[in-house]
Image (tube, rainbow, N blue to C red; front, side):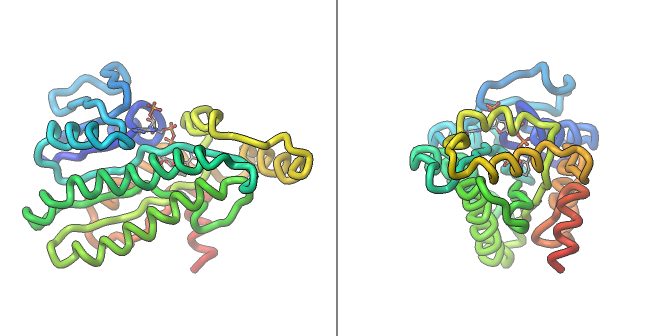
Length: 249
Ligand SMILES: NC(=O)c1ccc[n+]([C@@H]2O[C@H](COP(=O)([O-])OP(=O)(O)OC[C@H]3O[C@@H](n4cnc5c(N)ncnc54)[C@H](OP(=O)(O)O)[C@@H]3O)[C@@H](O)[C@H]2O)c1
């Protein structure tokens, strides 16, 4: 039986991905900052572990407790929206600590077992905003672009050892707690210089008439990344992300 370890399973894409793998008879190590058993269906193939990806000791303990795994899904992430000049450096650092350094730390923590076993897959949940450029999310986009660069470079190093790395690029989803969780990382949105751009951005973000990404799309893309060795390095998830990827080709 194969085992997947997933970060950020308390809500959104991580939770849906945990459900998706459980339904396909995998062993699932669902990690959360505050572990909760009630969000997932009861199963003897499910372990719920505490993990804060920004805390090196928490990373070490969770990877040790998970034991041998076949797939790591780095899904934990936080949103931030601010005019770039008004984004406090503390917020920029916080976004990178979770989205970028947390992903790197987890990937480094599992790499030795994958390399020695000559098998394993790391799936990093990035974003389609690394492909389509938007204002007001400069720090967030930069944190995910760094994940893309890290993943693509490390993939070359680990390919000779039979270890694969993949990127899943979801589009815009209104089904998760992402916007709500990101509220404490929004700054300067009422600054008079940016009123017009802020209004346009939030109208676009809340628009339900154009294609969107569903949590199920992300779970399916992660599944493909995990199970299909012929999958491309960058896998779009969601109708909007797929349209953006097609436009870029
Ligand atoms: N929603 C979108 O439009 C969208 C689009 C493209 C990409 N993404 C990416 O998709 C991923 C999942 O986001 P989502 O939309 O599902 O949002 P979400 O519902 O807010 O889920 C994010 C998860 O990350 C966890 N998390 C945050 N900081 C963490 C930390 N330091 N250590 C461990 N876990 C942490 C959260 O846990 P807590 O409950 O403890 O906060 C939560 O479970 C993120 O990487 C995000 O950047 C989202």
